[in-house]
Structure formats: structure tokens, C-alpha cells
Length: 596
Image (cartoon, rainbow, N blue to C red; front, side, top):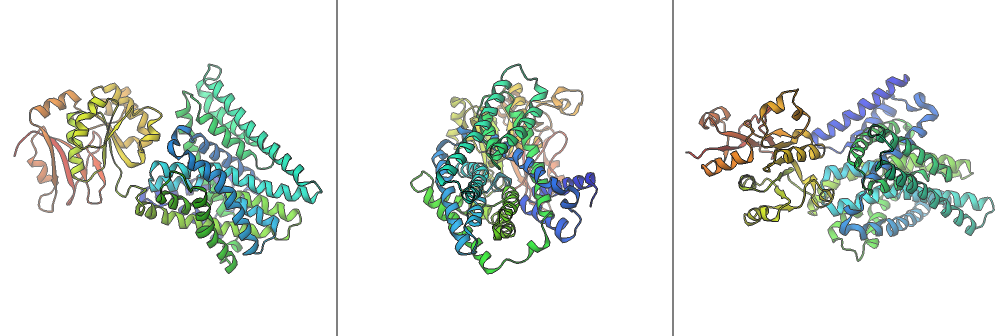
């Protein structure tokens, strides 16, 4: 495929198809992207990035990686660390250099690489990266502390590992040119500090500008994109590959500032990151040669095994000793370390640079690193979820229901859901309103659900659905509008809406709020009155003989279907536009008058 427009369209379609299949069947998306790139590239030759893009491949990949890393930095909020901050510091400051040193020794003595090549590949293999870790976290639904450590490490180590490789290469080049070790070290650290300063300065300037009326709203997101690329280029001009550090610092700086537009910027960046991760993975894997697909030799296999089973676990165990992490958390963090896009991109740069500098084995590292990327991506994608669940660090069941608003009706609903082993939590900003829920042994969250701190205290990954059921229809609408992107708008529901609000395209409510829960759209007052009149929640399991049609005939005329629970534990809600289509084995929950 040599037509440029057709090439980009094909890459986009392949990437999005892999993402959709991964979502639909709960598979690791990176594995599918890797496989698709190999099939479309070296195996069949349908995609030929080198022929279509030529020398533009690496600049395009570098720009995409910079945006991905900035988006990752934007999500690193210091308040989200809470009690994981000590562990994160140790993993970045202690574990990363230790893993670099051990990997360097293994590369030299096991694979027999020269010291310059060993130190460079040691730095590259410190990199894990958000492009592979974030999808794993999304799929595994880890607890907040473990996920925070892995997320921070992945994003920071993208820049740190690249800098390790740069330091190793520049030190080798400087000493070969006759410069002293102290002189080389002073220059390199000065350049690193300058690159980080550029990222911090740009981030502060953006934060200040966006809090004023200097920048119109419609220009904020486009300006961010341009600023990221400019910051990346400026960092690279100071020192090769330091641009990643600059954009990461820029993202963290902006992410920890109070900007009213931050949620919109972060959401747009997340969408861009998904598209870029998909495209970059497909392009890079499609661009590899068939020779790199050959089976590795025993030394390379031994090196990879040491890296996965010894060096990484040892580095994490030593660095987190004495922290507040449990042994289970330390074990999982020590296991999860997939390598991704940045490692592949970095090795393409340094392999040729080492060869040009006269290091004979420099061109050996692309094949070795790519084999490790492939093996770690597949290995960790397959094993992370089962290991996390075995260790009790991830939810093993289907995502539950988060109910906003504590009252008699929501407590009754929560109790019937709990009787069916559906995970449920009631959130409210009133400790007094939560008292009856606590007395009924219903899990609760005390706090403002819309507060920024809540996303760092309440793990949204545990919940697949949200019900807003407070006495205020406006607040219910606000909750569903704000949290809709996090849950998926088809999974947020609210009481108190009328059917016409959701079905009438001229009504403003079409673009605001959640889906109408139950067909009548009762508000809290009407639901409370019905409870007083003896209404209650009923749960009924269908069989082949007692099917949905027969069940429906037994319901009073004004009874309301709420949801159905399938044997595979998936929930289906009754709403205005769609409702459950229950079959044998499904359990239906309805809200109906008292009766036989």
C-alpha cells in the first residue's frame, strides 16, 4: 500500500477495529494491535510504512509519543498519590537506576554486548510506558494504590529510561572525543535541568494564561497541542531525546494546576492518546523486517528471562522495602513491566547512532529489544488480570453500581442488589443522610461525588453503572453529565426525568443528564410515596416455563421494570429507548405495588 491517504486510513481502521474488539471481548488491546501490525506488515506486506512515509516515520512517531506522554503527565495529580507517594518516589529514584545497572550487567555478560551498547540497552529497557501500562490497568481494574504506583512509574520512566540511554551514549561519545568524566557529567546534568525547566516554564505559562481571559475557550485545546510539540522540540534542541522529559514535566505541571478547562482538555487528550497509541503501535510493528521475527538465540532468551523474572522483581523488592506497600502490592508491581512504543522508537534511534559511532554490535539491539517488547506485552497482558485477582488487588466480578443519593428508596434498591451479590455503593455528601445506609450494612462513600479529590478516593473502575437519585433533578442531571464520559453515557441513569425530555431532539435535556431510569421517570418524592403505600422491589428468576412474557402478565399495570441480571453477571437496565430482553436464567428486578 503506497498511497499515503489510503495508508493512514487503513492504519486508523485497523487500530480502531483492534480497540473495539478488545473492548467487546475484554481482551488486551495492545496484544491485538501488535498482532495486527505484524499481520499487515512483515507477514502479508499490506502495510509498508517505510515505503509510504520514508524518513518521516520516526519524526511522526516521536511527535505522537510526545503527545501520549504529555497526556499521561496530565493525569498525574499529586493528590491522587495519597499514601502511595513514598512507593512512587522509591520506584522512580531507586528502582529505575538499579534496574538500569542490573540490565546493563546482564546485557554485557549474558548476551556479550559491548559496554557502550549494554549501558544504552539497559536504559532503554527501564522504559515501561503508559501506552502499554494504561490499557493493562483499565483491563485489570486494580485497586487505587497499586494502579497509582504503576501509572506514575510508567509515565515518568518513559522520560527517565530514555534519559538513561542518552546519558550512556553521550558519556561514551564525550569520552571518546577526549572530554573528562566530570566535564561530561556536568554538561549532561545541566542540559537535563534545562529541559525540565522548559517543560515547567511552558506548563506554568499555560496554567496562568488559561486562568485569565487572555485565551478564548475554543483555542485552548489547539494551543495545548502546539505547545506540546514546541516544548518537545525545545527539549530535544537542548539535548537529544530530552524532549520527552520536557513534555512530561509540562503535563504534570498543568495537571496539578487549578484550570477550569482542565477536564475538557484532559478528555480530548485521552481521545487523542487512544488514536495515537493505536496508530503508532500498528505502524511500528508493520515496519519491522521479517528477519526480526526469527526465534531468538539461547543467550537472548536467557537475557529476557533474567529481565522478567529476576531483575525487575529484585529492583522493585529492594526499592520498596520499608514502604507501606503490602507484599501483595510489591509482588504485583514487581511483575508488571511491559515495554512499549517508546522503547521501540528509542532503540531505532540509538541502534543506528551506536553503529555510526563505530560500535560494531550497536545494530544488534533493535532485534533484541523488539523481541522483549513482544514477549513482555503478551506475557503481562495475559497474566496481569489473573495474578491481580489471585492477590486480591483487583475486582473479580462484574462492575457494580454506584448510587448517588442516600434515601429510603436507594437503600432498599441497594439491599436487593446486594442480595444478588451485585457490588453497590451509595455516595452522598451528608453523613446524616448516610446513617440509615450504614445501619443497613450498605457500603457508602461520604463526600461530594463531583469533587476532584473523589476520583482519587473512590475507584470508578469498580462500577460499570451509575444511578443519580437525589431529591434535586438539577443535581442528578449535573452528576450524570459530569460523570457520563467516565462511565459511558449509556451507563448513567437518573430519576425524575420525563420520557419527552430524552426522546424529544428539541429538548435541551437530550444533551444533558443521564438516561431515564424506569419508563415513568418518577422523581424521589413520588418514589418515596410509593414506598409508604407498600411498594417494594421484587426479584424474579425466569425459567423455560416461566418466560418473560408470562412474567410480564403477572405484573400490576403500574409496576416498573428496573433491570435484569444475566447468569454471566451482566446487568441490563430498563430505560426509555431500550430495556432488558430477559431470557431463561435471568433475574429481573422490578418496583411494584405490594401484592401476591
